[in-house]
Length: 535
Image (cartoon, rainbow, N blue to C red; front, side):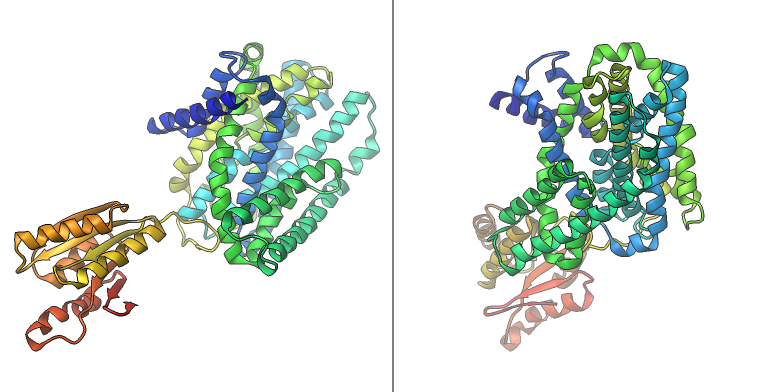
């Protein structure tokens, strides 16, 4: 079991990075690694891995949903609320119905079996859509109209509807007993699951805030993430036992309401769940690859691709058009739904094999189509989202409270050969460690000799031994050189010493900090013998 874990994590990681270097999404490499490790090719994984696969996928989905909830923007959702609701209902349902009709002709299915296949195909993948949309939010693409938030919310609502319809159809087909009254009650059941999912998510957010903030049961971020992850996982599992609410939606609502209740706590949890996703992503997609049955794909490859194409073009496109009808989206933003809202992976992996395990006629074909949809749409969607977003969406201002913005911290530290240089270097090292940043150490040559510069280099190397830094020397006017160098390297802050009361002959040196303050558009941190001030 431990050997299998090492193979999954290391081979999955390095395969993903290798594929990334060729410009493709890392999940392609992870899926390929899973195929190589799986029973169809290498058969290198222990049987316990397959037994735990469903539980591991559930954990990965929980991480995805928490990240999605913690990244939602309430204001943007209110602005585009009707579009989000329609995206949660129409595209998946129109695709499912079109797939059901096509399956009658391509595979000789009856309509209910075809609709069961349509539910498998129509479900959207949070494993692809959530990371893709969160990345767009962090970069600002489509944020003005809240397009990533609308797609995230619509995807969660869509999966609630699809999974509920799928479970009802399974019950009908496995018992060979069709109850038309149950289908008539479907809209009520969906509404109940959504309403109770939101309510339970809100109560869970209140509980988490009470535990972590008011009662301080956690002493650090790791413990906070541990408690939050366990609570979110409980919601997903409990929904399977008590199917009166959507566990997926409750988990997503937990993160969403937590932003409103306690934004600092939500930011800390967001960072923690981003770290968890690094591992969960590898496990999820490697297991997807390991579960693919390559031999079954041979018989349904061409008709399966045709079915997926028909469902996308004739089914989902109609749903997209109806969902955005009357909105303020332009045609480019509507077109973005094609790459942004069509990937399949997680849900297909979770439910694709269920019809076959229950002995439903055509179950092997449903499983093969589910695997085919994963292999074709998941890599394509993961590639298309970041590729087409800059071409189809407008870039807006990023709200740092709603996303985790990965910012590069680069400090320009201007030092001379005076005793104050040590304090300036120590301050730069302290800030770089706190922000995991880098530093450029700048010495403007004036009257310094080579021996003094060498001593300054040794002092820099000693004080910044654990910091990525670069020592440069430049000739020129001190203040102008500091400002121009900071702009050239696009640093985030300038750190320099501030002389206090100086003798008259050194007043020109003391005026350097004032000149930098007046001319620099970059924040300046001044270090004195006693205090540090920021300007």
